[in-house]
Length: 183
Image (cartoon, rainbow, N blue to C red):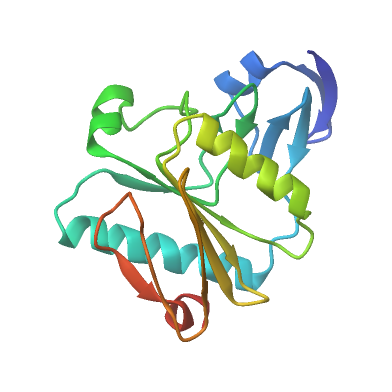
């Protein structure tokens, strides 16, 4: 499917292949259209920065290797997505390198920080896409309601203030207090 979309005040025809070669900042390619990611608040940004820091610190201190990314595009089932925070394992880092434009599959561990403008159906459609495209574990973080939902193919676990959220599959042994992540 081909679409004409307004990006940076320049009208361009964009296919998924175009997106894969050069994804415009703050966009995803969904159902033939470039969709701008919007609705980010200071709380959203702070949560993204904290989680990125916590995952990276743990990855290094536990000698698990790999790399942590923010706002880097990946390909899902026929779409291009841009997770808020993502972890790439050492094996996939060797396979794809560290200078890719867009990862040709989902990252194995992804976090999406839910903005006030996000719609539930769109969020859970994105979760399904990630799981169908190689993702092993997804964290949905709700800064406003102060919940963290961890989703794998086998289970969904909800964490609240006062709980300690932990990875279920990826980055084994990682945990952080929900209060610390969302404070």
